[in-house]
Length: 125
Image (cartoon, rainbow, N blue to C red; front, side):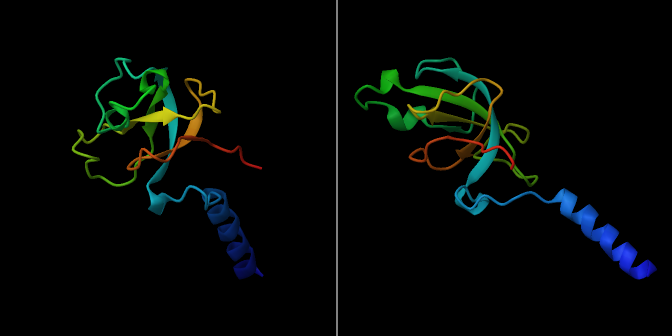
């Protein structure tokens, strides 16, 4: 009886630490959960970052109308990201036209592919 009770307790504790895995934005595909810190245009003076999608848009017609987000993302591991200083975990990504991103909002960002638009983090059900 005591063994079953301990097993049940461990199962509950482990289950509480896990999160649902989003297959549409997989970690292995370079997707990370991040929080929008700033929103601006292609000429916005965002802080320095290791990955800046504005570089890919240079010379593209109407690129001046594109909105960008400066996003702090979760990064596991103790290594540097894209030649950044160790604690710097930010990217500048394009905001899709159909997404009204706000500072403080939680989103998915692809930290290696600018062709992948930022996506709103779906609330837990």
